Amino acid sequence: MRLLRQLARRKLRTTLTILGITIGIWALVVFSSMANKINALVEGGSQYFAGKVLVTDASSIGVAIGTAPMNVDVADQIAELDGVAVAVPQVQLIYDPEGGGAFGGAETIVGAITGADEGHETFPLNPVQGRLLTADDEGTRVVLLGSDLARKESVGVGDHLTIRDVDFEVVGVLEPTLTAPDSAAFMPLSAAQELFHDSLPTQIQDAISADELASQVVVYPEDGVSESDVAAAIEDSIDNVNTLTGAEFDEQVGSATAIFNAIIIGVAVISLVVGGLSVINTMAMSVAERTREIGIKRAIGGSRGRIIRELVTEAGMIGLLGGLIGLALGAVVVVIANEAGRDSGTILFDLTWGTAAFAVAFSTILGIVAGLVPAWSAARLDPVEALRYE
Image 1 (cartoon, rainbow, N blue to C red):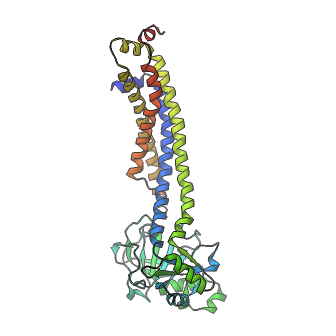
Image 2: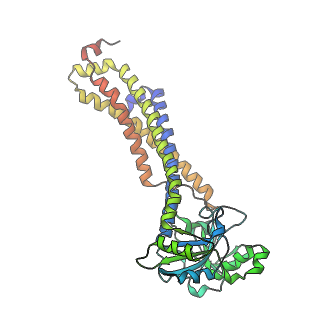
Image 3: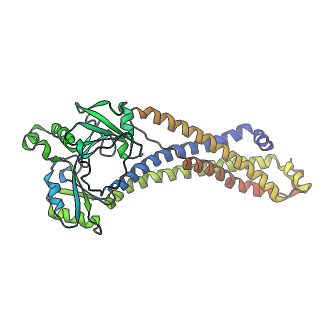
C-alpha cells in the first residue's frame, strides 16, 4: 500500500507512464496472438507435408495449389516409379467458389478414398462427434466437417448440408486442431469428383468424365527413400506436373512467417524504447522531487541498497500495472475479434498463457531495468547536500 501511495503522489505523470507501457503491451499481445494462430497453421501444414510429396498439375502455378484438373491415371504412373510406396489421388476444391480465397486461407473440400494411403498418413484427425469416413462411404454423399466449418454452418452429426448445390449428410465433426482441417469438408473421392467436374468449363467436362478427375496426388516414399529423390524422379518421369515436399513447404512459408515474427519483435522494441524512456523520465522526476526525503533516509542510516530497492520496486510496479492493463485490453480485442469471426469460421487470434505471461513479465522487467539508472543516481546522492536541496 505504501508503494501505491508513492505512485499516487504523482497521479498524472504515473498515469501517462503506465499508459505508454499499456499501449505497447496491448499491441504486443494482439500481434503475438495473431502470430500464434499463423504459426499454428504453418506447423499444421508442416506436419501434413512431412514425409510425403504433393504432386499437382503444372498449370496450377499462380492459382490455388492443387485446384487445376489432372487425370487420375497420373497416380498409377507415379505408383510404378522406384521409391514410391503409395500414390493417392485426391480432389481439393474451394468450399465456397463465390467466397474466393486461396488454398490454406479459406474453407476447402477434400475428397479421397479412405484407407488408400495404406497406413502411411500420420497427420492425426479425431472426431469429437460421430465418426471418421470409411472406405464403405465411397459412392455415397456423406461429409466429415472440421470444427470451425461445422460451427459456421451450424450443423452436427445427422444433419444435412448443401455443398455446391448438392445435399450431403454430416456423419462426423472433427475435434479442433488449430490448423487447416478445422475449415475443411472431407468427403469420398467420388462425391468430390462430381463437384469438381461440375465446376469445370463445358469443354473440359465433355473431354473427361468425373471418375477420371483429380486435382492432386499425395505420394508417400518408401522407407529409407528421401522426399527430394522421389520428387525429382516424378518430375523427370511425368510430364506437366509440379511437386512440393515438406522441406519446400517450410521454405516457402518460412519467409512469410519470419517477416511477421519480425513485426512482433519490432513491436516489442518500440514498447521497450517508449515505455523505457517514460519510466526513466518518471523516476528521474521522482528522485528530483524526493531529494530531501532521500537525504533524510540516508542520514538516519538508510543504505544505498535500500534506496535502490525502493525506487526500482516503484518502477517495476509501474511496468507491472502497464503490462496487466495492456494484457487485459489485448485480451478484450482478441475475444471480440474471434467472436465476431466465429460464425464465419474466421478465427484470427490465439492468445496463449505463454503469450500472456511473457507480456506481463516483459513490461515488469522493462520497468525494473528502466528504473535502475534513476535509482542508482538517487543512491549516490550526498546526504548533506540532499538535505540542503530546495
